[in-house]
Image (cartoon, rainbow, N blue to C red):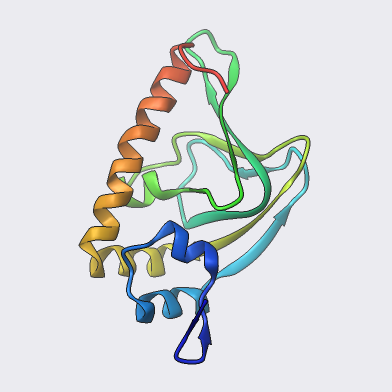
Length: 151
C-alpha cells in the first residue's frame, strides 16, 4: 500500500486497520524482518517481552505447559497473524513459548516495544481491537494448560 509516496507494510494494515496512514507509515519505518529455522524458539515463556510480531511467511506454534507437565501446542498461526500483544498490553513476562513451526519455519516482521506502545497510546480503537484478541488468546492458553484445547 502507498501513502504520500511511502510504502506501508501490508501486514501492518491488516493487523491494525484502525490506524491512520501517518501512523502506519511511521510503524513501517520501524519494522525489522527476521527469519526463524523450523523448530527454533522465537519467544520463551517467562522472559520479558520486547517486540510485537507479525508472521509474513511460514507458521508458528504456541506452546504451553499443561497442568500435568506435558508441553502442548495450543495454536498454530500463519501469514498475517500476529503475537506478542498480550504481554505488551498487559505487562509481565511472556505467557507462552512461541516457536517456528517444525514443518515450515517462519519469517516475521517486528515492531519494538516503544513503537507498539506509541501506536496503542495514539489509537484507542486499535487498542480496543487488540484487547479483544488478548481476551480470546488468554482463554485459549488457559484451556490449553488445562488440557481442554489442542491445536
